[in-house]
Length: 308
Image (cartoon, rainbow, N blue to C red; front, side):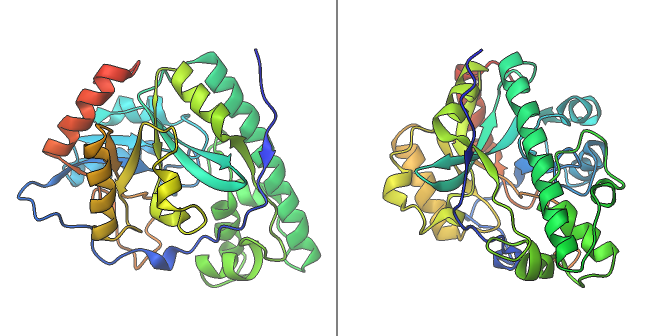
């Protein structure tokens, strides 16, 4: 099997959760959101298990959902088992395009595809090594933290990331808030920062296509102005994530209009990780209305391995 080398992204892309909008986009429709296609669980950097996520979705009457954990679909089987709605295979891949770090959402693929599974398993090992290196730098800064402390209370198969380090630092009283960990220690360019390994953009597209899935550029608004919208429109992805907590209503409309003009699918979701921001549960507050979901559903069924 041909496995291209990973690219190490040196671009700076600060995580800033305070940018989330107070209210989701309102396209003045009389239908409720029924599909949340961007949710994170304990399989990656979410705080809640796939079972807990399913219960939240039940409570919010969300009929369609996708776990889009970072670089893993390890939580899909359990989620599909307990969720009483339509569970779509999903994953969020960290990729590099022309030295810019982007995120790609994949949907509808065969989650048992051998090449895809093996590539992500290798990628998880690379991520694990990165977390070890960050812990070493924190120790040098007088904030000792072990990999076991970072993994504590998470399933063994969890794909570790910087949010796990932030939570461990809070538990050890090194910092008072989640954002403080990024702003002072582990954010891009900070003293304990270690660059993330990313899949090559073209390789990611090939993995998605070969496994029967479609590619969606995740939260495009977060990558402006590192990459212009004119460049985004030329990317060989299947579509764009239109609804997202970091998108304004006007930018969501721009994305939707572009997709409809070119017969491309657009998706949306809460990008839910935890209850960090004012203890508000945003799950199901961003996403697709019924007519929008039917549009995406038809595209999935025409183009994907996984049939809804």
